[in-house]
Length: 77
Image (tube, rainbow, N blue to C red; front, side, top):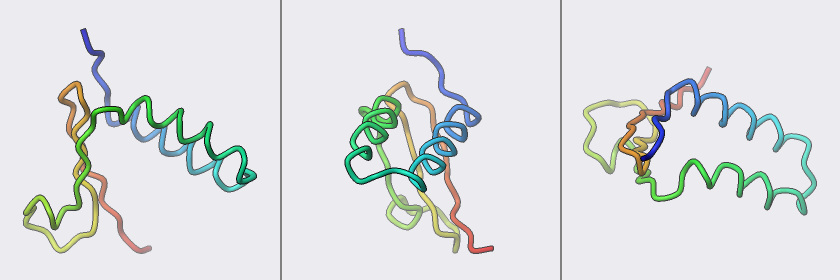
């Protein structure tokens, strides 16, 4: 049985990955990618535009293999 992934889980993994990437040597990137790949294995990831989402925002629509769905909006601050 697949475990449910919450928005908080995805937020935390992305925060950890982006935080680690700032300080990583090129050789260490493989492990960071593998850690995130476990969560994203079997996922569908599309841009908002490609999914036909009615928005002017940039972002990604993510559906994990366990059926959890997320929208990641990318906004310039």
